[in-house]
Structures are given as structure tokens and as C-alpha cells.
Length: 156
Image (cartoon, rainbow, N blue to C red; front, side):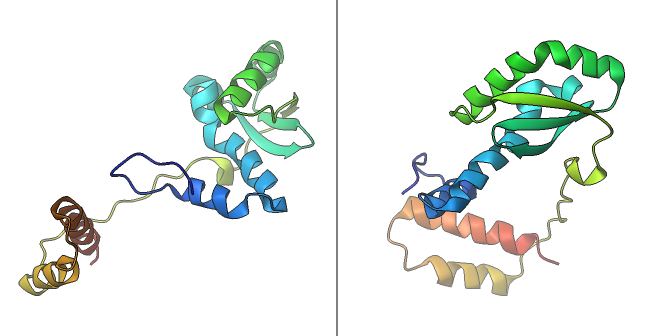
């Protein structure tokens, strides 16, 4: 099973990696990591001007929104590929191909709107207590109760 920190739930990405291990989808999941680490790897300034748009056979196509940035990134391609591979823990990116254009709006990260918190009703508090009472470990029981309370308080 996927390795995780004590006291923390397993990340969905780790569960998917475990589920797809040895299957054709495993490769696609590894490649999707490029998009996940792009912003952190290249930094805010570059990620505002250049975004990955395609990956095939070790070649990462990056859309760049201006000629000056394309020229600058041309000098940085090798370094960016190396840093991406380091973050991914594997040599996936062999080459970076720069392409003029603007990344589509769908490629830009969208911030999720957090629901407003509300006060729990006495019935909801009672339901939470009943749901977690069978958990014998007090710390785990407390964590589950807190998680359920957060979930319920974010619902309308």
C-alpha cells in the first residue's frame, strides 16, 4: 500500500498510483504529474507565461505566450526538464518543445470556492457522537468526530 505519514489519510494520488501499478494507465498517471508540479518547479513568473499542453514519448510541449519568453525559455529548457524529472522522481521529460500561443483557460488552475461554515444542530452533534462511539482509540475517535463536524458544517 502507499506510504503515508502517521495520523494522516492516504493521498488520492498515492491510492491511484497503487491501483494502476503494472497497468497501462500507470504511465499516464506518472505523466500527469508534470502538470501537477509545473507551477512549483518553474516558479510563478514562468508559469504565468508558459504552460505544458502535451506530453508524448518523452517530449513535453509547452505553450508560451510571447516571443521574448520563448527565447528566454529556449535557454532554460534543459534545466527545466531536469528540475521536472527531479520533482517527479523519474526521467520522464527528455525534451521540451516550445510552441507560440496562449494556454487555454481550462489549463489555468481554478480556485475552489469554499462553502461557508455553519453551526451544527444538536441533532447533528448527537449523530456525530453516535457515529464515532464504536472507535476505541480516543485520538482516532476525536479526529473522526472533527472530520464529520467539518463535513456537516460545510453543507447548507
